[in-house]
Image 1: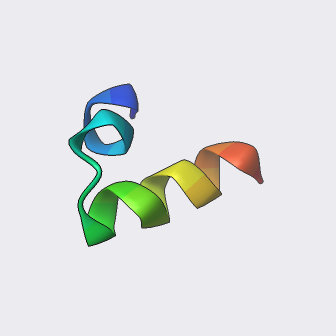
Image 2 (image 1 turned 180 degrees about the horizontal axis):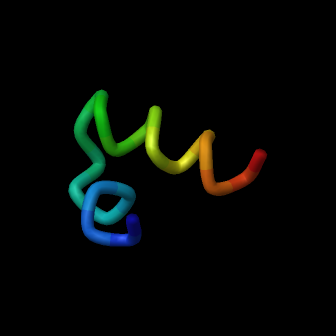
Length: 21
């Protein structure tokens, strides 16, 4: 979910971590 990642919010960080995984 790039949108959440770009948001830069706490949830965005979580989503970004999931993408990396």
